[in-house]
Image (cartoon, rainbow, N blue to C red; front, side):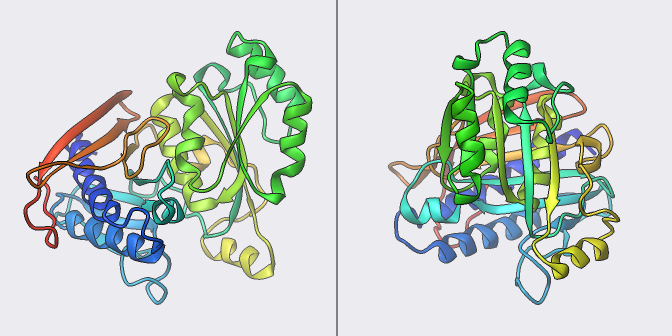
Length: 322
């Protein structure tokens, strides 16, 4: 992948974030998602790459834009896999809550897991604990390892878990271990990346959420030097067979970093839509100017760029970011 691609991709997440942010707090999550998707696809048409969506809004018959298998970009090279979530946290935007963002992950062709749209059991840790934990270990044991790796007491650890009925036991186990527990409602890409960013104060993420978002998270963790482990959780025979159709021979296999994102390179980009853990939300300023806050990372170089930009957008319908 070309170095310039990382910066170009940020233009895509910025456009999607600005378009969806106009729907903040209006209670219309589908409209916010459609706005992000439309802006993202239009901006992809300006990018010099030959991309194929491997994680998107669904199949061609289910989603009119950014569907799995769709081609993106206007060049023959580089050939890349693209994983997109035009609006991570549609409900968050509709209700005006924190932590919504637009996200993209890119890797060389054939390097991203083609994850079906189903549940995935996910765990992430930061660089210090990478290689020392296992998804199947009791959380009490995992917390002891992380405490040692991060040079903290267990009472000072913070565990991020999605607030869902299916997580009640793990929430209780984490609390009984003496760790601090932070719950979140929707949008798990931001929270799952948090353990690899020291400034968030999060030491462990563990939850069952969307598999497509899991692959996007894995790309970010590869860039940050953290670790993700996961396992698909098919709910029925149809979902199990869907895994087989997408080339996953053992749907119950423990998925490690190399299973999720192969190779030594990946790019992750995100732009905040609402105020979040490590990105500010879109801000509409005077004189038709809009401020965005983004991050772009590349695994091969280990570079992490935080980009705060002010855009002049006089035409609110035809959004173009240069």
